Image (cartoon, rainbow, N blue to C red; front, side):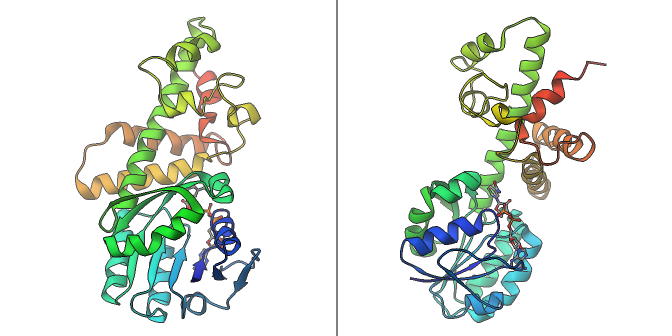
Length: 290
Ligand code: NAD
């Protein structure tokens, strides 16, 4: 298949490389001067999008996605698949999908879970929104770049699933860290805490698969001085998107709101920038109630 790939950063570059490795003809474009193995670089986004069967974007945010969409949609022939894998706000995802559909394209919003490791290993999870026809066109490429793709519904449903998932993740990571810090003060051994919670009703992905306490549970960024992993600022981005969506949909999300405020404080005022999102635990260790 002839594929255009726009946005070859930490995530996009390994995803594009995996498509090329699988035998597809991939033409790429990035604002920055990058090279990706097996990918031919074009001079502009429009050049990378022209004459392709599918175009994939992997960009920082909704504003940039909208600008890139304005540039590439006129360059794409009707029937072309347009897969946006960036994490963006639901409103931008829906607006771009509408614009693409009006041009006769087959748009899918397909944000991912799995991080840079999942992108490199081809083990991402895709959460997709779009028509059944558009999803069917994208699915063989999801199979190369990832291990699972869930068709969540119409345009924007993929972004909706992603931010709801990450709102749960942010809040459960915070409360897991709070609980470890409380357990410390109560004199409870951390390993015992893990042994109980990981097999009791307080269990979660944050505790069981990504334990924020060093030396406890499976290997996680906590065992590597909280190098990301999943950086706190990316969690903050997703929590902000969740609260933007909650506001526009008139949904009451007080814990999501509190999680967003805490990660904002952590990233902006407490040296959390560049640290894994589980570094909330050393933050709580240092704090007192009043
Ligand atoms: P990144 O900043 O490494 O990559 C983004 C790339 O887009 C950069 O190379 C940048 O030069 C390029 N770009 C910006 N504007 C452009 C334009 N107008 N035209 C062409 N290229 C342009 O970011 P990333 O970590 O690869 O993340 C990409 C997306 O994936 C984000 O939406 C992010 O939220 C999401 N995501 C990231 C992770 C992660 O762990 N890094 C996990 C899941 C989802």
